[in-house]
Length: 459
Image 1: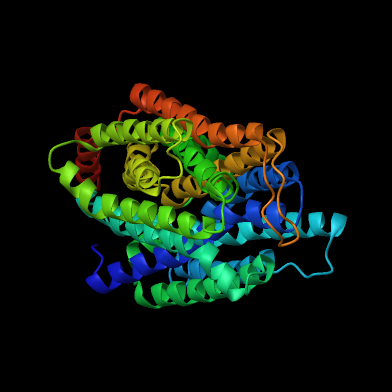
Image 2: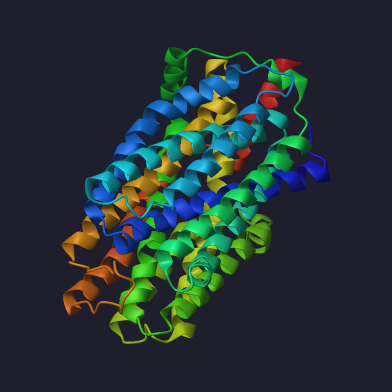
């Protein structure tokens, strides 16, 4: 079954809405609770890690629930819609902390709301990505749909990255706490509208809805048997840790290192260049590279390109060129170009592990495999923000909690911030390169062979 143009459009629109929500939480929750509300950065990071442990239990069960669902609306759409509405409500509450909530009350409020946010986001994210291998068995169609989903997700991420700081300032009339509340409400409404349109547009294949499912115990056994899914998952964790370390620290870099009255404008300019680079890489650069190179070769090239970008940013900081926005944007664009393609290919590779697992075990586990993607992406962001929190406390960064003048940081703090923002991501990317290069076996040729074998076995 192939998606129609209308369904493809709806699928892409859904990706924009859901990744606006995810980007807001992943990139700004640390800044909101640490820099604006005054919680300890280490505490915020710790809570995020605890939430990820809870997700480790919740996500696989969610994958099984989706796989076992049978309704007149299909297997995916009931969870898409209900999860979206609940997550939108929790998102608003997460960034709209009542003024009287302080001290221990604020710590409890944050912990509860963030765990609820992770649970409700899982409800809609797993069925969203599980649609890809469920609606088409054709490798090229699957790759195309992955590009559409990831490209549009990049658009949603870029909208948040580019627009948040200036929008928050405008909506709150300079008061960031108020601005985040109204901005979160706007994002939540957009989220509900886009996912509702997706649910009303997508028509699920009845034959897929009746898919055989497994118990949770069988599911874990199937995952352990799927060595290529495990390799892909580890690679996703390492790459996304690098990405989210950058997204969490970059706002501190512009506010306290670049600083000055125009830091919001410079941050927005850098984010705009980065977001545009990421989208263009998925839409234009990847198709061009795909004509000449295999997916595995492109993947390795992009890991190298991202590493080079971080090295150049570090060099720029130490040569006194960090305040030159042209140079800084050029270096940053290398990282974003690479990340755009890497996010597409990790989805393609994970989709291929579904076929690999079916051939190896006789069970087709779309929802289970893609529950791993939801979990590991959140795990990566949790690990990244945990490291961010520990790092910010170790380097002694002093945040602004009174909406006053930007606090001047020590030379040691600035040096530590630069190293955190570049060296840690480089370590993650190098580790991903070696794990992927040594353990991943699903080349383009092997993926096509597996798909052909499965088609033959189904008659």
